[in-house]
Image (cartoon, rainbow, N blue to C red; front, side, top):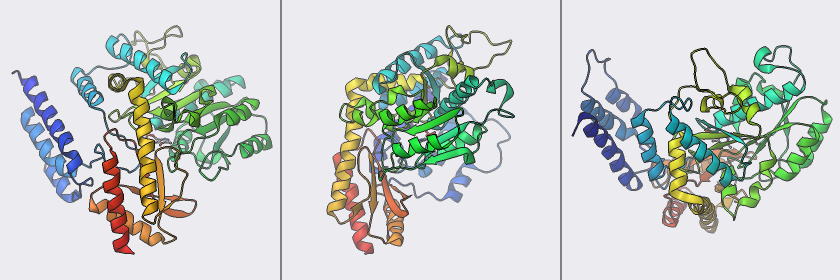
Length: 461
Ligand SMILES: *Cc1c(COP(=O)(O)O)cnc(C)c1O
């Protein structure tokens, strides 16, 4: 065996061994940060270390500090796992070390992203003519989508924002619901609008935008360049905005409509949940994650734009030494993302979609919803209150009005290790938040976890 083969196989074997054992390990690592630091630490090495020894040391130092997010009973945040084919494809992307800047630097990366992007649009029900950028996640996708909107609404007002920036520009109205994801605010900061620019729209009981309030907020302000940001998949409840109604209202004000669909856009790939995102295809840009519900390894997100030229106008650039970037006839990969040099993320997205196929993606989404309903039913039977309408993969759980109890219980569940879940603040209440998006989670995992949560709740009552 040559040196590469031995080293790569060793790394792959360790990763595989971890995957095979993750379901049986405590979900929380319980690691002592000081111990981890010293396992990684000590003085900067003066001299080289043989690669095999580096890998051995890395495995020994890291393993005690790994959290079982890739395992079946991690219900915190919206995490996803990673499908075997997608994880293996990501290993190949690293092994091949392609720079996915354009088709000159990596024809294979360009072709894979073109095909995977086309498949993703088809599954999500987005326009086939939309451009697709392979970004780091929904944060970057939302930033690019909103940058495209910023370009377009200011261009319509006669302002070239790429050249002149926002100094002296016509004021842009930003309209979004009070239930927008916090990363939208960060996108607005990065784009120079600032968070105070947001005109906040009310929501219904499950966190979807109140379309009547959207109409009044838009009507109350001046006629101006406007960005409207909608949402598919509220991070607490899974609620999706009423797209046909909201988009119709926003169109009357000639707004650019961006949809943050980090995980919720995948509802469109499952016939049983597609009604939740009906009409979403009429927006102008969409941000979506591959590393959450699609179960692609971190970091992987997709930005789609109905107007490819606007997408590229917002993020492309050129330099004398760069060859092979798009030009409007054929926008290259680097014209659609904020990075130039990057890992070929498309291989893993392609592999996930190839492994699952249309029916597999639908089944993955449906299973997450089914497991969320099952968890909600079991906890309700055990005396908990389900505080949201479980429309998708998110469950909010309360235990009476006893906030300290809920907080203590979340900590107790985390250190018990059967499963991991986090807390949230929803309508003034501290609640337990349970999210389903891992392809390996089974009914048995839900039953074991519900049993552990209820057992800990009884012990503390
Ligand atoms: C996770 C999430 C984001 C941010 O996505 P990243 O992948 O962390 O960049 C944005 N919006 C929603 C609704 C999310 O769930």
